[in-house]
Length: 93
Image (cartoon, rainbow, N blue to C red):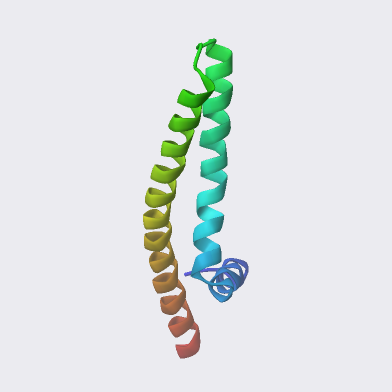
C-alpha cells in the first residue's frame, strides 16, 4: 500500500513515459562512472595516453548504456505493475 504522496509521484513518473524514466535512471550512473574513471586515472598517476583513456571511456559508455537500458526497462515494468495494482486497489475502495 502506498500513501498518497508516493502514489502521485509514481503517477507522474508513469505519465512522463518509459523513455524519460530510462534516461533518468541511466544518466546519473553513467556520469558518475565516467567522472570517477577520469579522476581515478588522474589521482593514481597512471601515465595513460589520451587514446587509451578515450578507448576505455567509449567502451564504458557503450556497456553502461546497454546494461542501463536493460535495467531501466525491467525497473519500468516493475513500477508499471506496482502502479496498476495500486490504482486497481484505489478504484475498488
